[in-house]
Length: 194
Image 1 (tube, rainbow, N blue to C red):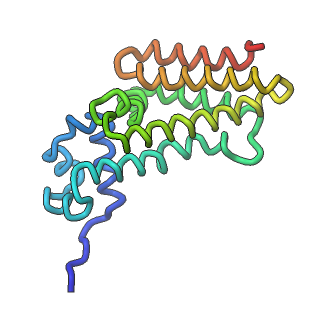
Image 2 (cartoon, rainbow, N blue to C red):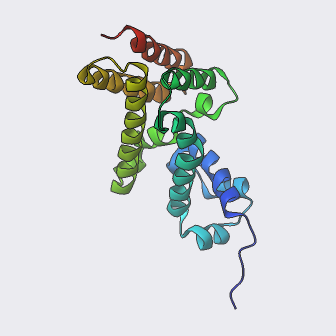
């Protein structure tokens, strides 16, 4: 009879997620992952197969526990008219809160897109799917906020807002003020775009 796992997998993945989010895949050393998760190297490899397997689990956790809950109001049926405004306000608040992982570390997936691990096709696919999921949610929010505007104008606005959000996540680690300006620009465009 095999040994049963003596740790909470979800909790270990969450702890590892924080290390990957802060350090990136390449700089997340196994000793740091061991320290964060409370697991030794063999337990990590037995449970996840490799550091990469743990990273993949952390990305899934990030999408399910960080990204999608924030996007939920934009993916609901129906989408409230102010859902997009509230989403941008929540992002702005997160960037202002220095203790927030979003303020300190940006977005795990955007960071990964700009790191060597992005050369891996599976990572590129996950990042592209995330960007499409974000764009779709933003698009739904834009349409709910501006239901009488032309579909083409709303699509362009959703593209612009998505780009501003991605830029904000990319910038927040190095220039939080610029990240906030991106969010403010997206909010301004919502009410001032023809």
